[in-house]
Length: 123
Length: 123
DNA sequence: ACTGAATATTCTCTGACTGGAATATTCGGG
DNA sequence: CCCGAATATTCCAGTCAGAGAATATTCAGT
Image (cartoon, rainbow over all chains, first blue to last red; front, side, top):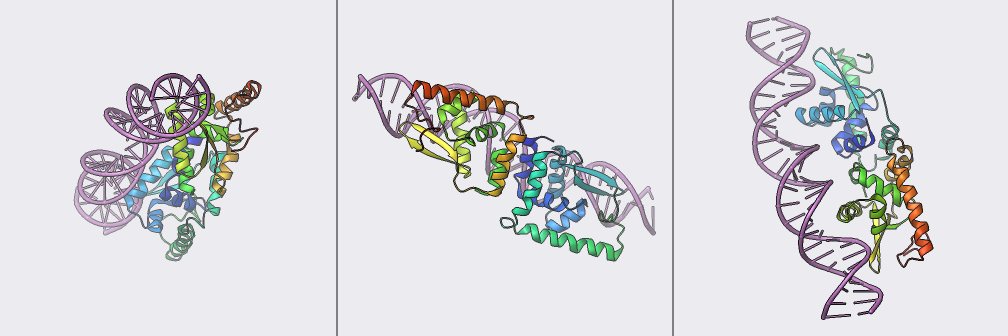
């Protein structure tokens, strides 16, 4: 992870939305895809992009791939993750996404889904 | 100026170097060019790029164009300008550039150059 | 009007990303 | 072993940004 990589990742709205989601905790691809309402390949490619640039890490559990913020962080990255909250005015969708995230987590708990619920389990 | 524009500008080393310079005060193109030791067209194009994205403003004085940080700022931009100081380890050139900037300003004062010295005059 | 300094723009080529569609891969269950 | 779910990758076409070289523009001084 380096400064240029960080900024390259941050200059796309979809990637900002993803970071806004995973900053609250790990999520698997299908969850992100469902919350963003974007095509699977699109989401997967952006996740791979950010993973290649060192911002995200992933782990496989059965058929699911869980993405989370990279352990080894970077001051610029930390600082800009905090900035995301200030951008709610500019990206109203951030709040909508987070609401959808909470709703999804609740549903998964209720259904006792076999899909990994990152809120409850760490992989 | 909006968040995406800001990040698009920040993800290039030359542009970071330029911002690192002008955050300490306005400079004209020839100064920036001299400090960075980069071709004129390259510098000019990156300045235009950042101006078009709203991060910089310019004013013309005679034959010189002075660039400065845009008046109307943005929390993300402010925050990342401050980050530049933390990046000295990653971009040792930042410190070199600032030293060259100070040296240049001194020389211009000494020579009583007709070229606008932003430290002394505002246009 | 001509010259030179300072700056901007244009052209061409190239590399990096994007999106959509399709295909491949991996894995658990029957 | 086949199927479907979850995910990744590939292919293709389009756009954007970068570099270098060349040219254009603007302006002050002679």
